[in-house]
Image 1 (cartoon, rainbow, N blue to C red):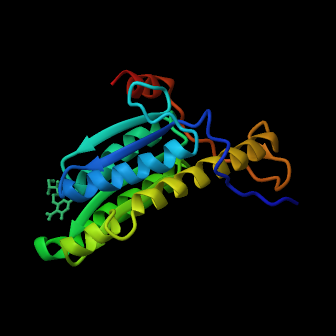
Image 2 (cartoon, protein in one colour):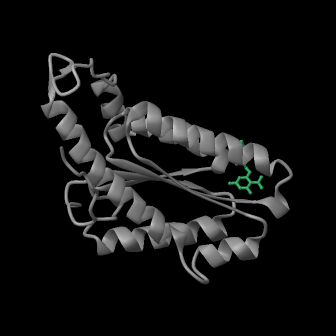
Length: 193
Ligand code: INI
């Protein structure tokens, strides 16, 4: 048997995408800079013109899952970080937005096998959101750490599962291994867009 753990140093070949909601961008832009700071200090080239991180801006948190799913199904990325801010004080439909976003992100991760990090702040006030986006600490940093850990972990787990799989059957469990539909067309399309 074995122990698998993610790490924060095997980052040179990772490909990540960050999906950011513009709504409350006073907060989300700060989450993004915390996130970028962390990635950069762990050896990732955060330049949008580089090959490691792509950035996708969406109108609000509600739109995040749709884009995250498109990116994850491309199987181009080792991890996707979703950044948003939903503030109860200003949002009568707060619960509905949060339910949809959290469900959408969790389902995307489970259905594609790609780590999708839930970096959507949910607070009662703008003050609380700002405190978590840089005034006291910056959770953007934490979300980036979560992405690195999960991306490096899933690389290990995926390669262990493929090494143990012969003709679609896992030789350790004798179970058929579910194969995700990987479309090279969709991967190409995401790269081009
Ligand atoms: N989107 C957010 O990310 N945070 C919010 O607090 C918010 N409020 O207050 O409504 C919000 N609304 C926009 C929503 O995410 C969609 O973009 C919009 O409904 C269009 O589908």
